[in-house]
Image 1 (spheres, helix red, strand yellow):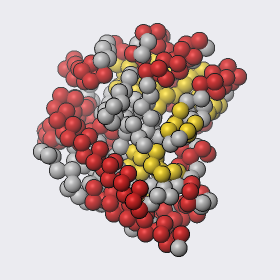
Image 2 (cartoon, helix red, strand yellow):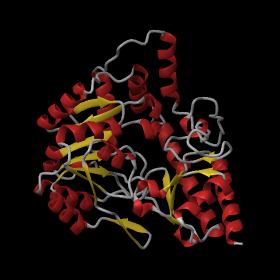
Image 3 (tube, helix red, strand yellow):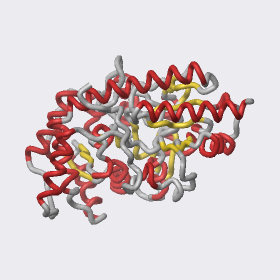
Image 4 (spheres, one colour):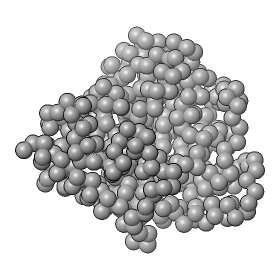
Length: 393
């Protein structure tokens, strides 16, 4: 490979949320962290070069994007997702969770029902509850090691709760599903039928494993454009989360006006300069780096699968179709949620994301971020193996 993803970079003492805040988050200081979804790899060289040039320029004033920024973003989505976007659809935000919060405020009122599909990325439920909306859960169903949508429940809950907004996670975090076109179509048709707007978080769209294809929700049926807010960002793909820039596409003019009005009410305008330039550089120069990264991540997934099968057969990998997060079913260990957490944190000395934070249906599961050097992943799995072996003896 041209890029060395085996390089272990010490991120400690860099104010890194992943490594430097264990004690503040109630964990032992010596835990090995594989929780929050950022990567332990340096980003693509073209992005670094642009960020260095910005830093050396020395003036960090108000910044806005021009046509070349839009062309870079638009070309990425047309080339790799067959999605032609219009410049007027684009609204830039500091993050996707921020955009979901703005959409909730713009399109619903206090007490209105907003639906999600747990176990799902936990900020979804937090932003719904914090905005005093009613959370409705169309729980995903685990069948034969594979999660499916209960479409009857999906429609019934929309009708019974008068759901106004559906927050879709596509690809799904943490269960790793890459929804098929038919699944997306069926959800979209139900939402159209009952005038439910859809906020689609597609931040993991660049990480899809062989044999799968990511479909942008609004492309599955032209009618879906009228109810969609499509949330994209370079942050997971190129490890830019700290630069806080997301590209939100809203084809419907009335929804877009309401969204932008709510952003203005929140007092937000331009995204930060380095984030803006990093995003453009990523989409213009980062493809080769990304392709090699995806090969490396596939190797990490294969390694984790084989290690679990050989050494930890009690823990089942829910085979991911996308993302660099893996979802482990630990229920066969027979431990309560509290005992499982103790085993992971205090015996294995690992900082993972407990499945319970993704919803009650996630209890007994753990989410692991495999976007790290293989030696780090190996150490984490060995720690887990030793802790489980001790517990079971």
